[in-house]
Amino acid sequence: MLKATAPDEYDVKFVTTKGDFVVHVTRAWAPNGADRFYNLAKHGFFTNASFFRVVLGFVVQFGMNADPKIEAVWANANIKDDAVKESNKPGTVTFAQTGRPNTRSTQMFVNLGNNAALDAQNFPPIGQVTSGMEVVQQLYSGYGDMPEMGGRGPSQDRIASGGKAYLDANFPKLDSIKSATVISPAGTTPATPTHKPAATSGAKPQS
Image (tube, rainbow, N blue to C red):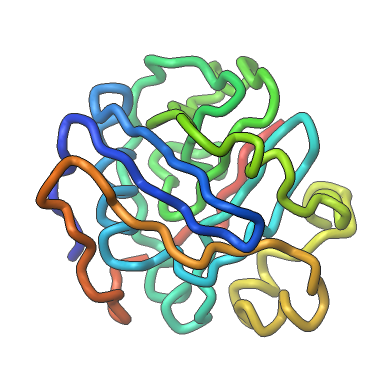
């Protein structure tokens, strides 16, 4: 139900356990993705969500809700694909997907390296970190990649079923999002966090 059209350009400020960073979104880059991110941020979806996948030189991934009940509601609320107009350069912000058409939902990642190889796999960036990239680069990475990708980090399936309680119990050093707020343009004051949003895929960038 959260389908407001985003402004042509807007900024989202992330307050995290490591510090703050700001993402500047240009809707023309990927309109469907920009609209989804705008609605998620406005309605508090990212509050308390962890940066559950941090792979040095590759990506920082987030966007699974802290509450399993809300995560389940978003499980299949996918958006249509956008054309790739910008490359996945360091600092760009992109929605994750499964490799199949139209599977973007709520999971996102910040590119830590030059991931231009993702361009041909239909990962369109929606914006760029314009301040605080040093914060993004310092998010805890000690657990490595997810087991689905051959690592020893958190499992997406376990996050979906156990939420932040699972992460806090088993991966206590992970950094998380205190808030993600639309801070510009004027008149985009965030609404009260919703508890009935619309759905997330178990999407992840393909390396």
